Image (cartoon, rainbow, N blue to C red; front, side, top):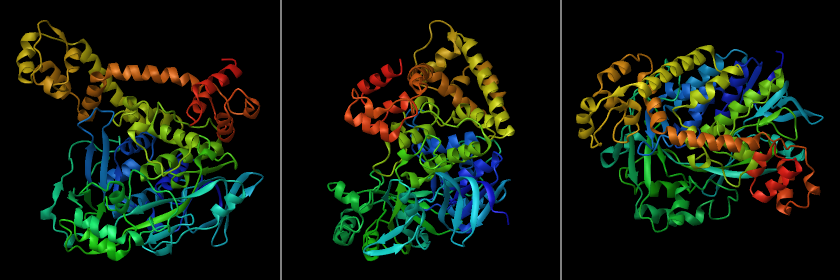
Length: 624
């Protein structure tokens, strides 16, 4: 075999798969290296994709031409749109997946992607010459050469599992850890540290009393992750179940705290604040008598259930006793206990916005090695790293998404500008422009960008053009068609909306909050006829048009703010100023600017510790 490639990707998790598929689909000869070809796309923690802000990231990945949305839809066993009671900026899709089918869909995807080869092995060393990566050396002693290397090792770098006082070397339960890369990069000056995450026990569904729990049924409407019309949810849809901890549960947990790795000094690294272990919950929220738990099915043909909300690294006997106090789980059998895992990560401020390292040319980092947590955050980074690795090999402008263009842009800018002091998870609150970064318009925002760089297919692009055409025609009709009071007043009274005194455009009525487009159309035959004429993606287009029209004033205002602040992003800064000599900057500002070396004024303004006065100093220095 000829081990020479354009791009080598280390790790076949969510970041690695997207990186490899992106580079290969754009035309790079790509190699994906994984320890186990049967674990490609493994869901290490809960069997679900999406959620608050995370669902937006998955739709963005799909809009650009990535794979996660398609894989998720094809393996989905429950779908829900979260936050429906709030405005559309907060709507977030979430899907339970059949864990085994999810892996099979990823295996089918990567093994059938042109230009993409797979090699089962472990990378122990990078080949680096004159501050530029040239390839990798594997545990089998094989030298593999490439122009670019993308590191997406997840939790496997020096991975250490904890169950009570037991320590087990591994990247996941029953899987080996990886050593060598962290030590090599540290010797080259990279800053590394340790982080911690955890996972709950897995339960045997045959021993769960679901009659004592509350059933949570999914939604079966047109919503899904992929914008491609032919991608459907085809598997049997299943329910989740809700139960709660209680005082007896907490009492059993408190008894085990002296043996908890989190509280006996065994674990020193930082864990996620927003997804704490159950032992952390009972301490942090000591006065709370109960915590909600979700039992999530692992698959259509499996009896395995994931107990969401009960992450723990307590000794096995403590976990079992505590779980047996929970309503519906009194006699439950465990498939395996929960555990915590510590792993190496690299300070992401050592990266540029393309996710290429600043110290080593053509070396990219993506996923949990950058201090993030979550399948979706990893996949978004992997996609951007794969795109830019291909560009580095074949030429072109760096591909970077702005904070006003995508949640992926917010994610990466936060990482490379601010760094992390705990595992980073995306929230809608992290984005300044939530109303223009909605889940429903990700294709309109991003598909043309993906098409221009050669990632989104012609079919995907033509689907976008067709959707936009129908959408614009419908908006034009709504803004120009007039209605008279005699046609709609009975309807308006029936929905407790003020009747008309004079005629108006449909547009003026749709702005009212009491009803939507479909309800209004029942009172306006010409409008109903227009809606019925939409044969392709009807519900999706109507929902999108309704959001645009009901919120157009807010959307336009947010766009104007984004455009105003965007001007700072166009004032280049990197390597134009010797910060150490600018005494008018604060000491903290000088230190931070030297460390980050921001690309532009906009990025500099978002660095923690950089004040508005510091930004003004930089603008004066640049003649602005």
